[in-house]
Image (cartoon, rainbow, N blue to C red; front, side):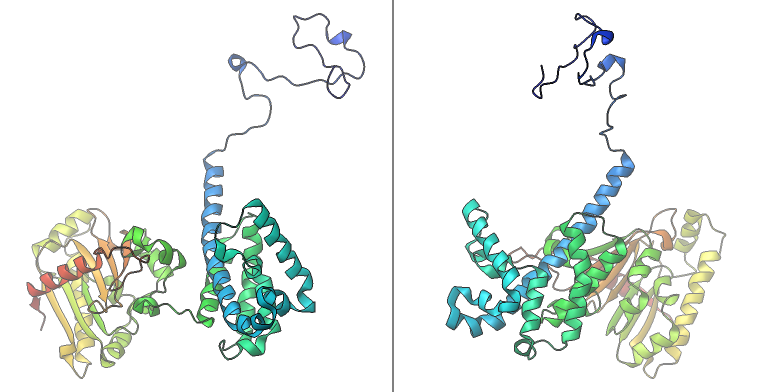
Length: 416
């Protein structure tokens, strides 16, 4: 007799009775098949195949990035609300200043936050005494409500109310998706990252890394930058690099540009001569170091790539001629230097503002049978790289490539 008052069928055919003898009201229970008879053929399929694992990992990666941005925004907004409203309400209402600031319009959600705080206290969920306050239990929409209700108090510190509201509106979709562990599309994630960066900028947290004007500090880099030295991005090829980091973003506004490679196509073919002239006339000093198109190293590289003899050398020569025409248009040709070297090329590197604390470098190694367009790309942040507080200042890759450039430049000869 089962626990529900129903009679269970016999366990196997060896027992007395058969299916014909089963009385009415008996519940039939499915039995797992013997392993030798083909386990797994009956019942739900619990294993995940490779596609399923790829999907859940992609979801987790996107949700993780979004959570970091949302966490930063919420912490910053909470700090701003406390800094502005606490001095107004705390002298009169003490620890209940958040309840007072919410006012009659916010009584429902602020009391809910008070209740959650009490439950967390009783169950030991408050691990940090600094979180034992009602403000720590307010959600992003509730913090926004406090800010909008008291906008005249925030207006002296935040320039545009509309910008703040729009950014928080865009983040609300992402917040709901992440909080419920649903799928987050790449487009929505990108929108959330842009909105978060805008909002943090509006709330007065502009990046203190000098190179952030050219290569914005990513939220993940800000948190785990010490794990990867000064490498801030890795792209499988140059096409994907330019899709996310266009040539204008790399070279535009540079005050110094040093480049070493075979033909320097990333610069020559993706940044117009007119822009180079304007860049140099605005004070940027340029040093370009090409592989000598007449050297034996070019011929070896042609054989490695399996291309026709003379094809690579002609391409390099055309790039040099193009840069010479740019130099000829300048009032100060000495600020735009072109030289060639004869050694075996090992890598191509573009060092932007590499002499200061806000440098950015784009580096590719030369692979034996892979053209430069198809080779993996590293993006490096020079100068003061982002590390956690108290982390040791170990050397990164940027100084290594800068030293290699200077050594190659010293051994090269100018192009007239």
